[in-house]
Amino acid sequence: MRMMIQSKNGFKVISMNRRKAIRELCLNCSAWSAKEVENCQHTDCPLYPYRTGRGKQNSQLRSRAIREYCLWCMAGSAREVGKCTTPYCPLFPYRQSTVDNSVEIPAVKPKNPHIRIGTQRENEKGYNDLSL
Image 1 (cartoon, rainbow, N blue to C red):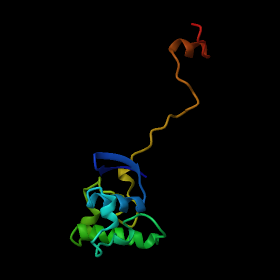
Image 2: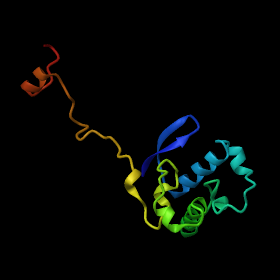
Image 3: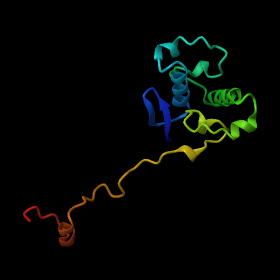
Image 4: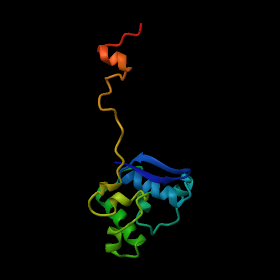
């Protein structure tokens, strides 16, 4: 899923999954310092075991940790988690049990990349004659 998130220098569009989302949130929390993420002192944070984004991780426990973090952010109200209005949070699409694709940015790809767009005269002839 491609989405726009807040970064050190404004906003950026990146491909996102749950592992990357946790990593991006931890970087945001630590002022985009990877060293601070490694040395994080918030051991009571539900995302703490997943902060580095490396190693073997249980995907179900990671999803549960995201849900717990979102509940903490919304003062324990599951109803407020569903009504969250922070689409630039990396965890936003993963806050509920299903993935919310409303923030997905579609990739822009040409419909027919093998077709070259030429001048009108070239298109009328049906071939590319460069000696015109």
